[in-house]
Amino acid sequence: MLTSITRLVGATLFSLVFGTATALAEGKEAPESIPGTNKVTAEQAVDLIMNTPDLVVIDSRKSSDREASGWIEGSVALPDYDTSPESLAKHLKSKDTPVLFYCNGVKCGRSVTASNVAVAAGYSKIYWFRGGWEEWTGKGMPVAK
Image 1 (cartoon, rainbow, N blue to C red):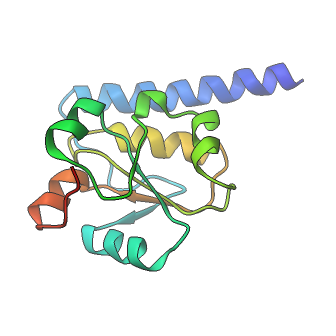
Image 2: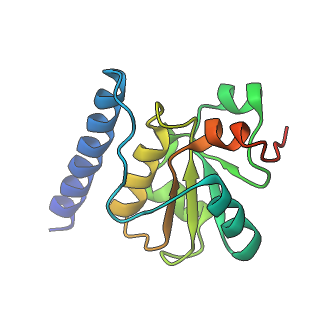
């Protein structure tokens, strides 16, 4: 029974990840929303960071993107291809820990993929910063290096 559940979860995660990667590779933008998440703007992300002490901010970009342009201060580098229920559990205390995912922006699907993994793994306080790094830097928000 456990093996069947594990296979089902794995197949679901594969479908979510593969579907997102394929859609964005075809030049489409990230979806307007992700079921199970709360979409936020740069200003809302700042508010969450300032007012949610246990918030974990996850940078879903490749390490080369992070190294080249910087990151949101305090964010955890966890690229989408390394995001799994196990890797999330290493950074999040419980399924109720608030978590904010971001990547390069609306033409990047990395935070979509990572958010979908968190939803499928049962996390309940997921925030998705759709505009990502492009919106963050475009609005002159602080950058860590």
